Image 1 (cartoon, rainbow, N blue to C red):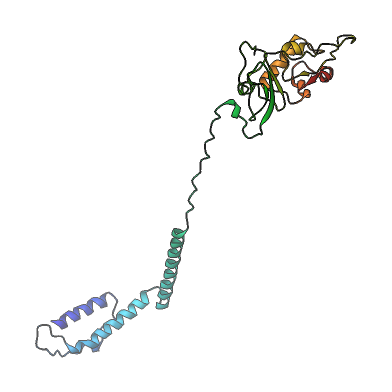
Image 2 (cartoon, helix red, strand yellow):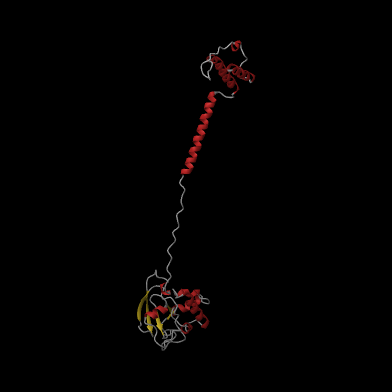
Amino acid sequence: MARVRVQELGEELRSAGLLPPESEDDLAPITVVRRPGRHARSQDAGPFVGRVSEGLRERLADRLPFAAQHLTVLVAVTAAVLVVVAWIRISASSEAVPVPRAKTSAPATPLADSPSAASSGAGPVVVDVAGKVAHPGVLTLPAGSRVVDAIRKAGGARAGADLTSLNLARVLVDGEQILVGVAAPSAASSPAGTAGGGSAGAPVSLNQATLEQLESLPGVGPVTAQKILDYRNAHGAFGSIDELLDVDGIGDKTLAQLAPHLTL
């Protein structure tokens, strides 16, 4: 039975072109020595099997497009490519991802309790509060304080004191005098023997003058005097006499007339 199967296998391989044509050696009788047991094999089948293996190797070598060394090179190249790909993946996964820093919010600036604390970064101001107040005298207040703060620190205005001539919201200027409830000395009064309408008295304080005092200055009428007051109320105390040029209606000529009769 085994011989018949081997012969059939040989015919199939020859018909497929994987074995050379049958020779006389193949037709030689094969002595089969049966051994006890169900699956006994023939020892004489070895030469035939060897020829089948050799024929298969020759046929496969003829049909394969490359030799064994080509296969070795292909395997080596494939392995190198896999190593490079693995290295790239490892490098990409190990790169540190920058974490954005959390922005620290600036501390909230506390609101000023009163207008007096508006300019707490500057030095204090020293003013002279005179007139109808409880405790007149020289006072020291924080920078940015207002006229109302100075009057309050002086003990407040006395009963019946007229405060309409004062701008209570004006920011204090260091070194100024605040007259509460009394009129400032008129700069328009002329000493005896002085001719004409020139004002030979004390200069008028530009930051404290009333409407009437401003009107008494040369070249200043009711309209210009009111504009000076409006500018002072809007922008605070004048920093210099030349700042009058910013008032509408006052030019270089008018400023030259006013400068000798003014002080801050």
